[in-house]
Image (cartoon, rainbow, N blue to C red; front, side, top):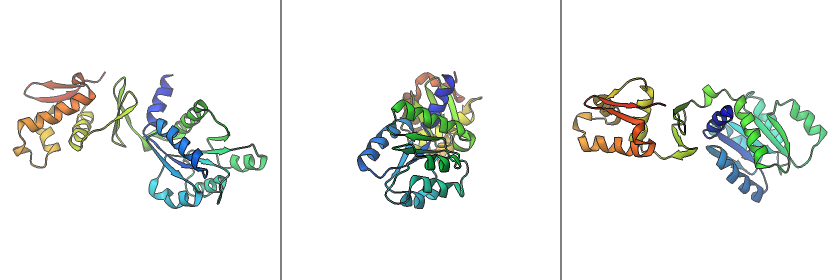
Length: 234
Protein backbone atom coordinates (compact mmCIF):
# COMPACT_ATOMS: atom_id res chain seq x y z
CA UNK A 1 0.00 0.00 0.00
CA UNK A 2 2.82 2.41 0.91
CA UNK A 3 4.56 1.64 -2.39
CA UNK A 4 1.31 2.40 -4.26
CA UNK A 5 1.11 5.78 -2.53
CA UNK A 6 4.64 6.61 -3.64
CA UNK A 7 3.85 5.56 -7.21
CA UNK A 8 0.65 7.63 -7.17
CA UNK A 9 2.55 10.71 -6.03
CA UNK A 10 5.08 10.16 -8.77
CA UNK A 11 2.34 9.68 -11.37
CA UNK A 12 0.87 13.03 -10.28
CA UNK A 13 4.11 14.68 -11.42
CA UNK A 14 4.33 12.98 -14.82
CA UNK A 15 2.93 13.72 -18.27
CA UNK A 16 1.05 11.40 -20.64
CA UNK A 17 0.83 11.61 -24.41
CA UNK A 18 -2.59 10.25 -25.38
CA UNK A 19 -3.83 9.39 -28.88
CA UNK A 20 -7.48 8.68 -29.74
CA UNK A 21 -9.26 9.68 -32.94
CA UNK A 22 -12.82 9.59 -31.58
CA UNK A 23 -13.55 13.00 -30.08
CA UNK A 24 -15.98 11.93 -27.36
CA UNK A 25 -13.78 9.10 -26.15
CA UNK A 26 -10.69 11.32 -26.20
CA UNK A 27 -12.41 14.07 -24.23
CA UNK A 28 -13.67 11.66 -21.57
CA UNK A 29 -10.33 9.93 -21.23
CA UNK A 30 -8.43 13.22 -20.96
CA UNK A 31 -10.65 14.20 -18.02
CA UNK A 32 -9.90 10.88 -16.35
CA UNK A 33 -6.15 11.04 -17.00
CA UNK A 34 -6.04 14.59 -15.60
CA UNK A 35 -7.21 13.13 -12.30
CA UNK A 36 -4.19 10.84 -12.21
CA UNK A 37 -1.25 12.69 -13.73
CA UNK A 38 0.20 16.19 -13.97
CA UNK A 39 -0.30 16.87 -17.68
CA UNK A 40 -2.05 15.21 -20.63
CA UNK A 41 -1.08 15.88 -24.24
CA UNK A 42 -4.06 14.70 -26.33
CA UNK A 43 -3.82 14.03 -30.07
CA UNK A 44 -6.32 12.88 -32.66
CA UNK A 45 -3.78 11.27 -34.98
CA UNK A 46 -0.42 9.56 -34.57
CA UNK A 47 1.30 11.76 -37.16
CA UNK A 48 0.63 14.93 -35.16
CA UNK A 49 1.70 13.18 -31.98
CA UNK A 50 4.96 12.08 -33.57
CA UNK A 51 5.72 15.60 -34.88
CA UNK A 52 5.32 17.04 -31.37
CA UNK A 53 6.88 14.21 -29.40
CA UNK A 54 10.43 15.56 -29.18
CA UNK A 55 9.27 18.97 -27.99
CA UNK A 56 6.79 17.63 -25.42
CA UNK A 57 8.97 14.80 -24.08
CA UNK A 58 6.13 12.97 -22.31
CA UNK A 59 6.83 10.43 -19.57
CA UNK A 60 4.24 7.84 -20.69
CA UNK A 61 2.53 7.03 -23.99
CA UNK A 62 -1.08 5.82 -24.04
CA UNK A 63 -2.64 5.20 -27.45
CA UNK A 64 -5.51 3.48 -29.14
CA UNK A 65 -4.32 1.05 -31.82
CA UNK A 66 -7.02 1.68 -34.42
CA UNK A 67 -6.55 5.22 -35.74
CA UNK A 68 -7.65 6.92 -38.96
CA UNK A 69 -4.13 7.46 -40.26
CA UNK A 70 -1.04 5.70 -38.92
CA UNK A 71 -2.00 3.15 -36.25
CA UNK A 72 -1.02 3.34 -32.61
CA UNK A 73 1.14 0.29 -33.18
CA UNK A 74 3.07 2.00 -35.98
CA UNK A 75 3.48 5.07 -33.78
CA UNK A 76 4.91 2.90 -31.00
CA UNK A 77 7.36 1.34 -33.47
CA UNK A 78 8.52 4.81 -34.54
CA UNK A 79 9.08 5.86 -30.94
CA UNK A 80 10.97 2.67 -30.13
CA UNK A 81 13.46 3.48 -32.90
CA UNK A 82 14.99 6.16 -30.68
CA UNK A 83 13.46 5.69 -27.23
CA UNK A 84 13.75 2.18 -25.85
CA UNK A 85 12.65 3.02 -22.31
CA UNK A 86 9.51 5.17 -22.34
CA UNK A 87 6.52 3.15 -21.07
CA UNK A 88 3.93 2.53 -23.80
CA UNK A 89 0.36 1.35 -23.27
CA UNK A 90 -1.78 0.34 -26.24
CA UNK A 91 -5.55 0.00 -26.25
CA UNK A 92 -7.64 -2.03 -28.69
CA UNK A 93 -11.34 -2.77 -29.19
CA UNK A 94 -10.50 -6.43 -29.74
CA UNK A 95 -7.72 -8.93 -29.26
CA UNK A 96 -5.96 -9.55 -32.53
CA UNK A 97 -3.23 -12.21 -32.67
CA UNK A 98 -1.20 -10.24 -35.22
CA UNK A 99 -1.33 -7.12 -33.06
CA UNK A 100 -0.34 -9.13 -30.02
CA UNK A 101 2.70 -10.59 -31.77
CA UNK A 102 3.83 -7.18 -33.02
CA UNK A 103 3.14 -5.55 -29.67
CA UNK A 104 5.22 -8.17 -27.84
CA UNK A 105 8.31 -6.97 -29.73
CA UNK A 106 7.81 -3.41 -28.49
CA UNK A 107 8.15 -4.22 -24.78
CA UNK A 108 4.85 -2.59 -23.87
CA UNK A 109 3.67 -1.99 -20.32
CA UNK A 110 0.30 -3.41 -21.34
CA UNK A 111 -1.94 -4.27 -24.26
CA UNK A 112 -5.45 -3.47 -23.00
CA UNK A 113 -8.77 -4.47 -24.48
CA UNK A 114 -11.73 -2.07 -24.40
CA UNK A 115 -13.65 -1.27 -22.35
CA UNK A 116 -11.35 -0.62 -19.40
CA UNK A 117 -12.36 0.36 -15.89
CA UNK A 118 -10.87 3.23 -13.92
CA UNK A 119 -9.14 0.77 -11.60
CA UNK A 120 -7.59 -1.12 -14.52
CA UNK A 121 -6.39 2.17 -16.02
CA UNK A 122 -4.90 3.34 -12.74
CA UNK A 123 -3.22 0.00 -12.09
CA UNK A 124 -1.70 -0.03 -15.58
CA UNK A 125 -0.40 3.52 -15.23
CA UNK A 126 1.19 2.62 -11.90
CA UNK A 127 2.87 -0.32 -13.64
CA UNK A 128 4.20 2.20 -16.16
CA UNK A 129 5.52 4.44 -13.39
CA UNK A 130 7.33 1.49 -11.80
CA UNK A 131 9.28 1.04 -15.05
CA UNK A 132 10.46 4.63 -15.13
CA UNK A 133 13.81 5.68 -13.77
CA UNK A 134 12.34 8.01 -11.17
CA UNK A 135 15.64 9.78 -10.62
CA UNK A 136 15.49 11.00 -14.21
CA UNK A 137 11.85 12.08 -14.08
CA UNK A 138 11.00 13.16 -10.60
CA UNK A 139 12.47 13.60 -7.15
CA UNK A 140 9.72 13.53 -4.56
CA UNK A 141 10.66 15.26 -1.33
CA UNK A 142 8.30 14.35 1.50
CA UNK A 143 7.80 17.22 3.95
CA UNK A 144 4.89 15.74 5.86
CA UNK A 145 2.59 12.76 5.42
CA UNK A 146 0.29 14.59 2.97
CA UNK A 147 2.68 17.29 1.82
CA UNK A 148 5.25 16.50 -0.89
CA UNK A 149 7.32 18.53 -3.32
CA UNK A 150 8.42 17.38 -6.77
CA UNK A 151 11.83 19.04 -6.99
CA UNK A 152 12.25 18.35 -10.70
CA UNK A 153 8.91 19.70 -11.91
CA UNK A 154 8.77 22.27 -9.09
CA UNK A 155 5.26 21.34 -7.97
CA UNK A 156 3.94 21.18 -4.41
CA UNK A 157 1.18 18.68 -3.59
CA UNK A 158 -0.98 18.80 -0.49
CA UNK A 159 -3.25 15.79 -0.02
CA UNK A 160 -2.62 14.93 -3.70
CA UNK A 161 -3.79 18.38 -4.85
CA UNK A 162 -1.41 20.82 -6.55
CA UNK A 163 -0.73 23.96 -4.51
CA UNK A 164 -0.22 27.17 -6.47
CA UNK A 165 2.90 29.08 -5.45
CA UNK A 166 4.20 32.48 -6.46
CA UNK A 167 7.76 32.77 -7.77
CA UNK A 168 9.13 33.97 -4.41
CA UNK A 169 7.17 31.35 -2.46
CA UNK A 170 8.59 28.66 -4.72
CA UNK A 171 12.13 30.03 -4.36
CA UNK A 172 11.78 30.10 -0.58
CA UNK A 173 10.42 26.55 -0.41
CA UNK A 174 13.20 25.23 -2.65
CA UNK A 175 15.80 27.00 -0.50
CA UNK A 176 14.42 25.50 2.70
CA UNK A 177 14.22 22.03 1.14
CA UNK A 178 17.78 22.25 -0.18
CA UNK A 179 18.95 23.17 3.33
CA UNK A 180 16.43 21.07 5.25
CA UNK A 181 18.99 19.85 7.76
CA UNK A 182 19.82 23.34 9.00
CA UNK A 183 18.42 26.80 9.66
CA UNK A 184 18.61 29.18 6.70
CA UNK A 185 19.61 32.69 7.71
CA UNK A 186 17.38 35.67 6.98
CA UNK A 187 20.22 37.22 4.96
CA UNK A 188 20.49 34.11 2.76
CA UNK A 189 16.75 34.06 2.17
CA UNK A 190 16.69 37.73 1.18
CA UNK A 191 19.65 37.41 -1.18
CA UNK A 192 18.02 34.37 -2.82
CA UNK A 193 14.57 35.90 -3.26
CA UNK A 194 15.55 39.46 -4.17
CA UNK A 195 18.18 40.82 -6.56
CA UNK A 196 18.88 43.72 -4.16
CA UNK A 197 18.34 42.32 -0.65
CA UNK A 198 19.58 45.48 1.13
CA UNK A 199 16.45 47.37 0.14
CA UNK A 200 13.94 44.67 1.11
CA UNK A 201 11.57 45.88 3.80
CA UNK A 202 10.82 43.72 6.84
CA UNK A 203 7.12 43.71 5.93
CA UNK A 204 7.82 42.48 2.38
CA UNK A 205 10.06 39.71 3.70
CA UNK A 206 7.57 38.56 6.33
CA UNK A 207 4.71 38.69 3.83
CA UNK A 208 6.38 36.02 1.66
CA UNK A 209 7.09 33.81 4.65
CA UNK A 210 3.54 34.26 5.97
CA UNK A 211 1.93 33.39 2.61
CA UNK A 212 4.03 30.27 2.18
CA UNK A 213 3.25 29.21 5.75
CA UNK A 214 -0.46 29.63 5.07
CA UNK A 215 -0.15 27.14 2.20
CA UNK A 216 2.09 24.51 3.78
CA UNK A 217 1.08 24.90 7.43
CA UNK A 218 2.37 27.27 10.10
CA UNK A 219 4.18 24.50 11.97
CA UNK A 220 5.89 23.28 8.79
CA UNK A 221 8.16 26.32 8.61
CA UNK A 222 9.75 27.19 11.94
CA UNK A 223 11.51 30.40 12.95
CA UNK A 224 14.65 30.53 15.05
CA UNK A 225 14.34 34.04 16.47
CA UNK A 226 16.96 36.43 15.14
CA UNK A 227 18.62 33.70 13.08
CA UNK A 228 16.40 32.36 10.31
CA UNK A 229 13.93 29.67 9.24
CA UNK A 230 13.93 25.92 8.81
CA UNK A 231 11.63 23.11 7.68
CA UNK A 232 10.02 21.03 10.39
CA UNK A 233 10.23 17.61 8.71
CA UNK A 234 8.10 14.77 10.08
